[in-house]
Length: 219
Ligand code: E4P
Image (cartoon, rainbow, N blue to C red; front, side):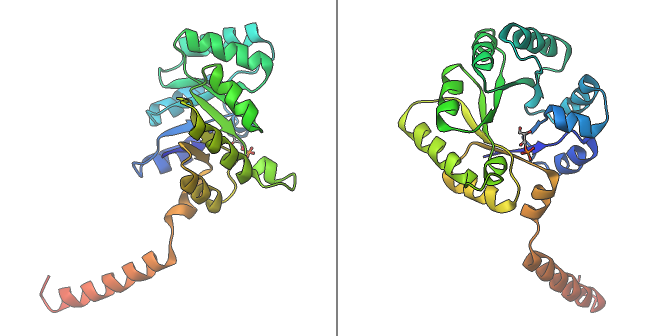
């Protein structure tokens, strides 16, 4: 399973990349805004920190505009940058054209299994269903992931399911159990997934006993 960071904060990306298990990064216009930095400059820096796919989102609403932006981003940014496209009819058409030109895409803002399947048919490299935003409406976002994985099990689909809008570690664990290909999450969730009080307690005990071994001259 691939683990992506969902941020445009290069300090966080450096921190998690140093763990050696970071597979990619997703950004969106809101995350770029939060970074306070120039879009292309920050995406270029991110692509230099993490060699996996880095999603950069188009902002045009029409197919021709999305294609033009996608091509321009591919031409001016490092090779590992992929093009993030909203799941609209215009976005599907742009995804199809970019796919035919050999450009990897991430179709975002997916809220139904039908949308996910249509994005896959258009040739998306990744489809991004949003879990947390469904939870926010009072429904269970994990049901969407389960539905999509059920559809994926029935057909030969090469598009990867990229679980997005992840709000807590349990979302990630449930995605793992469902066989989701990729999860993108904030740095806070990476840290929460790694931390366990029994690991800390166990390590403290080992270190204390090792001091005794050293003090006895047996190290
Ligand atoms: C995915 O690519 C999106 O950037 C992200 O997961 C959105 O998450 P949010 O609902 O927390 O904004």
